Amino acid sequence: MTKNVLILGASGSIARIVVQHLLAQVGSDITKLTLLVRHPQKLAGLDLTNPGVQVVQADVLDTDHLATIMAGQSLVYGNLYGADLGQQAASVVKAMQQAQVRRLIWISANGVYGEIPGAYGRWNQEMLGSTLTAYADATRVVEASQLDYTLIRPAWFQDEPEVDYEMTFKGEAFKGTEISRQSVADLVEKLIHDPEQLIGESVGISKPNTEGPAPRWYR
Image 1 (cartoon, rainbow, N blue to C red):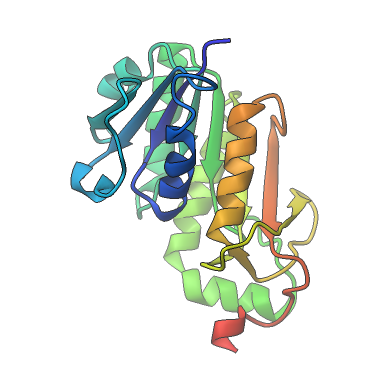
Image 2: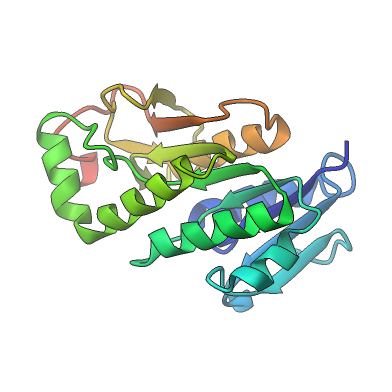
């Protein structure tokens, strides 16, 4: 089956890992890989010479332009950030609806539901502040969209070269305090390759046995 993948915010730390892994698959498992960024120079160091790879400079708030980019895509992976993240999500959802693209993988944040118990939940809220509000706004937009979405709510990132994670689901208490970027990328890639997984789910992801009042580097 033809699989055209659009990555929004392709220069983000998680997205770059996903892109690095997917580049070798363009032309086999993936037909076309489209990387949307506001600043293409942030993709420096990646080999983007494959004719099946397209880099598009665009703003996701330009809904009509975004809808034209989405035409013919199989799925969209959103790795976006900003105080206006709720507005960004609304534009993405509207563009997907216009382009008749249904599958969305969206990076959110732990704590958007107040699902983290105890000291870590309080620390997370204090540290993220208005950023957590922005993620929560976007989460509500995605959940109300009626798209085939998967929300991913990571713990705090670390850079250990490992894939080691457990998941919790909406309505369950969040576990752990940290997660490797490689682990989040691994889950995203699994969903890209098997997009029927976890449709309509909001998934918390953390490294097992990392419970505590804060990630290790803040204790």
